[in-house]
Amino acid sequence: MRGLRSLVFPPSCPLCCLEESEGCKECLGSWRIAPSIRVIDSIPIYSPVIYDLRARSVVLAAKERGERLARTFIVEAISSVVERIEPVQALALVSIPSSKRALRKRGDDFLARVVDEVVAKDPKRLQRLSLLDFKFQVSDQSGLSMRNRAANLDGSLEIKSRSTQNLMRAPSLVIIDDVLTTGSTMRAAIQALRIDPSTRIIAGVTACRSERF
Ligand SMILES: [Zn+2]
Image (cartoon, rainbow, N blue to C red; front, top):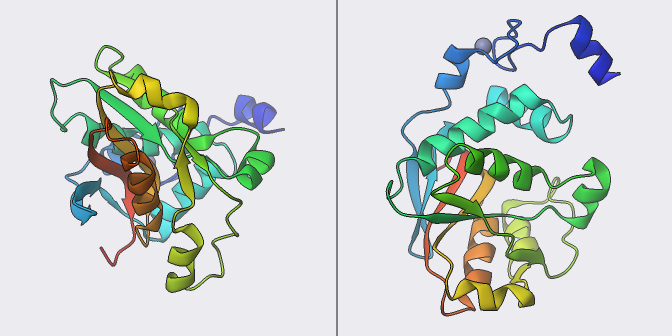
């Protein structure tokens, strides 16, 4: 039905709802802004967009409903930061994996697709490395308090065992997520990657950040 609908009605901008087949350039530009920086475990995490109600609706449209234009917003926000990080250096982008539950629900790894689109903009410099896995099934985050969320994710990620040999020659790593809320997912990813001493993590990037940061 979604495919049929988009044939009849051109897709509309997820922010201003104007019909735009290529995405609304003004609204897209509002997601390519200078990022805020928060340091987690001595790694700078860059996040351009404040996760308010409008941003939340864009992320949900992209993630839960698979809307391509909404995903473009997340790709643009992340790309705008990645373009500025050591612009001449090769980078490997490591996305936070989807939980098994999310994979079952959505049928694909949302962030891996986002990162593939970011890489496609500069394939000579960028690559995606799939290095992380969930160690155990994490509980659903919604409905948990901040402290319980952190406990829920603490140590939840691990480095895939078969990836260790590749890391010797891998370029600097940048961890990618969609939204920075408590920072516990980023922390779990940093901890997991640091288990291999040959990794060099230089930054984390998320499209959105909660207003507290
Ligand atoms: Zn718009």
